[in-house]
Image 1 (tube, rainbow over the protein chains, first blue to last red):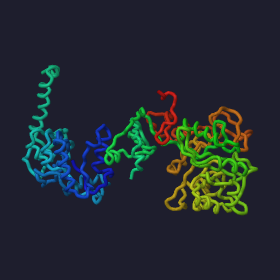
Image 2 (image 1 turned 90 degrees about the vertical axis):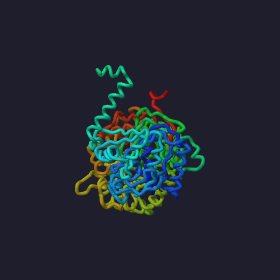
Image 3 (image 1 turned 30 degrees about the horizontal axis):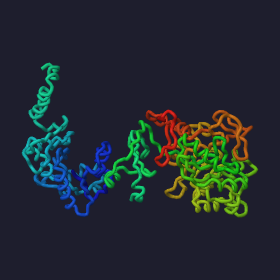
Image 4 (image 1 turned 90 degrees about the horizontal axis):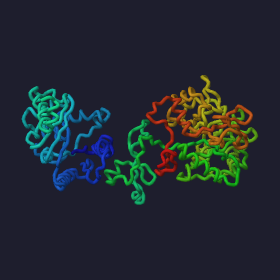
Length: 206
Length: 375
C-alpha cells in the first residue's frame, strides 16, 4: 500500500524488505503478482498513476488489509488528507516520523520524510476492508475512528461509510472505547456462534 | 549487478527447512543458490521476478559454510611431503576423503624437507577448484624449514635452514617455485626474516609465525612486515609469560598496524591444547580463531607406524607422536571432530543437532552424503 521515498529497495526498513521477510518468502506467490510502489522512481506521480491503473486492470481490490497509526492514519494518509484521495506522494507527519524512529536506530535524521501511498479513496474502492488494531497506543485512534464522526484528521474514520469493513482488535486497543460499545461487539461473537453451529451452542448450555 | 546471461539462465536452488549461519547466529532461513553462488532471494523476487526451480528439504539441519583446513599434512596413508612420481593422485585421494569431514577446501601442507623434495613435489600440486571429485586445493602450506631449532617439534633437525647470505633468494632456491604456494610458516627471530616476510607478502603469500622462540616484540615487528597468521597457537612457541607474552601476545597486542588483527590456527583435537587454554585464546580474540587439523598421513587409518616427511610417526589411539618419543606430531582428528571438540570446550548451546556431518556441498552441488541420508 505504500513505500518510503528515497530509501533503497534493499534497505532493511523499506516496505519491499518488510513484505519479503514477513510475507512473500513464506508463501509461493508468483512474483509477477506482487506489486509494491517504487519509492525511487524517477517520476513519482507517474509511478502512483501507474499503480492506480494496475489496480483497475486487475479488476479492483478484493480485500484490503492494513493497520492504523497512532494518529489514526490508514496507509500514509496523514491527518488532513482528503478522504477521496488517490495514490500519491505524501509528506509524513511528525507523529509518524517519531513512531518510526525506533526502526532507524533512534536517529530522527535517518527517518524518511516522504512516502508514496494509496489514497483513502483508493482503499474505499476495495470490496472488503480488514483493519488490524492492537495495543494500548492505538486505543485513542480507534476511539476517534469509530465513536466520533468521519473526519479527515483521523482518516481511518472514512471506513464508517464503507459497506464491508471489519476492524479486528485486542483488549488493549479498546481501552478508550465506551464499555457499551465493547460489550456490544463482544456479544456479537456469541450470537454468531449460535447461528453457525447449533450443536456448538447446545454444548455451551444455551 | 547479476552475472552474465549464462548465469541468469542457471537453475535456482532453494534449500528449505534449515538453519543457516548469519551475523554470528543460527537463523531459520532458506539458502538460495544459482550457478554455484549464493543468491539474494529478495533481489531475485523483486528484480527478476523469479522463483526457485528446485527445492531441497534439509530436514531441519544446519547449513554451515564448508570447512577450510589450512594445515593438513596428508591422510589415509598419503604423505604430502613424500617426493613420489604421482603426488597428484595422493592429493586427489585426500581431497576426496575429507569431503565426509565437511572440508570443502584445503591447503596441502609440507613439513620441513630437503630442497629436492620441494622441487619435485610443489609443481605437482596446482591450485584446483573443488567439486564432486574432492575438496578444492587453495594452495600449498609450507611449514618450515626456516624455523627454530629449539621449537622444531616433529620437524627433522638435519633439514632446518636459516636465511644465510641472500635471504629471499635462499628461500626461493630452497623451495624452487612459489607458484602453487599459499602459506609459509617461519620463525621471525631468524636473521633477515623481515625482508623475506615483506617479499612473500608482496607476492600475495600469507606468512604465518610458528615453530619459533620469538618474543612479543619480534612477533609484532613480523606482523608489521606483513605476517597475518600464527601456526597452531601455543604449540611450538614460547609459553605465555606475563612479562613477555611471546607470540601468544599478538592476540591482544596494541602494536599491530591499525585496522589489522592476527589470525591464529588452533588444533582442537583435545590433545594439543587444554580446553582451558583454548578458551583463554578464544575469549581474548574470538574473531581471529581458525580451526585446523594438522592431520598426518595416519588420519583415517588405525594405530601403527606411518611416515611424515623424513620422520617416522607412531599412532596410538587419538594421538600421533614422533616414533620413540613423546613429541606430538600432528594429529589424526578429522575436521568435523575438531569442530565438535571446540564447541564442547567453549560451551555453546547447540540446538537439537550434534554437528555430525550429514552431507557436503560444493558450489551448490552435493558431493558427499552420509549413509543414512541416502534414499
